[in-house]
Length: 203
Image (cartoon, rainbow, N blue to C red; front, side, top):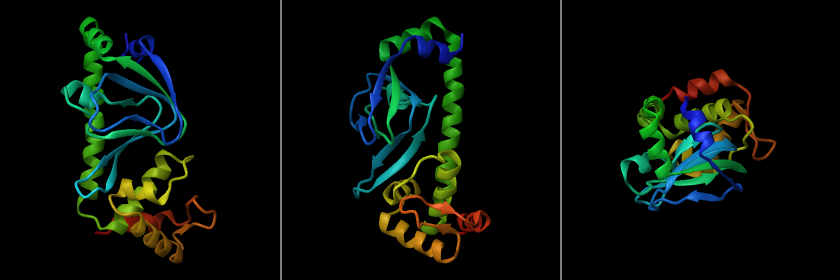
């Protein structure tokens, strides 16, 4: 039996409004969340008080597993970016599931490995880039993976690891160069994808 089927059988559905917190950093994990509808972000706050978005999780994604299986409190806060529906599986049911279905545990390890690779790719890709390149990266990634979502400048900053003020200034520069269009307000239209790609490659 597939891991997805087992999780679907042991679920309690919960609905969250946009901006609603699912769990907070420092809290003790009680179970595992699976996203059915909507979009969830994991935000972490640095020592200086700056918020950074570590991950974005859409439908079929799992939330809260790292702290659950590490036996640690949550490192990040999970927040609904838009109205979302999640299922919740209590910790004891997850452990029983893996005990009774070893193949599900192997599937979960495969999922963890892919998820870790994506996280490593994001942070190593940003490590040597300046703010403008990281913002270009963020615009490309967010549009490709979440094209229906209109991102605030603050959310773009949190994903790119910079400040909203830097995002605003950089977007204004991109607009002057004909790379994007912001005339629709919060919506950012990419007009010259090739030039934006070249910006994302600069360091």
